[in-house]
Amino acid sequence: MAKGFQELGHTVDIIMASSTHRCSEKLVEKAEGAIRVIELPFRLIPVLNEAVYLKVGKLLGREQYDYVQINEEGNFASYLIARACHKQGLKFGIYQGMYRILPGRKWAFYGTIHHKLFRPMLRSTSVGAFCKTAEAKSFLNSKGYKNTHVVPVGLDFSKFKNRKNRDWRANLNPLCQPRCPVGDFA
Image (cartoon, rainbow, N blue to C red; front, side):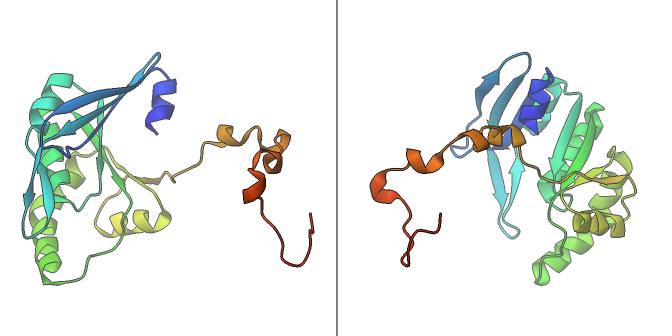
């Protein structure tokens, strides 16, 4: 998705948890638009094993994004990022992949808190939700989200344009070529 926006001339930042617990920024591609990967330090909430990003509010304010995509409606970090967006007047939407309730008492307890305290703000302030599957859309609709759309994960078919003109068997190492134990049927 980032590559598609970049090809249209947009700059896209992918913000993720830092493996070193330090801020870092890497320019992945630069053309008309750009793709940057920004790693932010985080802390884990021990009981939930959920990440909380320490500097996301400052980053969102500094960069002045047009739109922020938040992954997974049910994560505590998603709520905190949405709250930071709302405080700064940034539009945000949710990209939902998972569509089931996690089993166990701690998740049931968290789900109750999320439903009462966090979900109302997420529903009322997001511009909508994009779901990977129809099941994810149904899940969000059951949680009160109205503006949901299925945007499936897709393939970049341009990667396969040359497949008809390429003799892939000729490019294989002769020692690695597939052999049929009962004869060659090709």
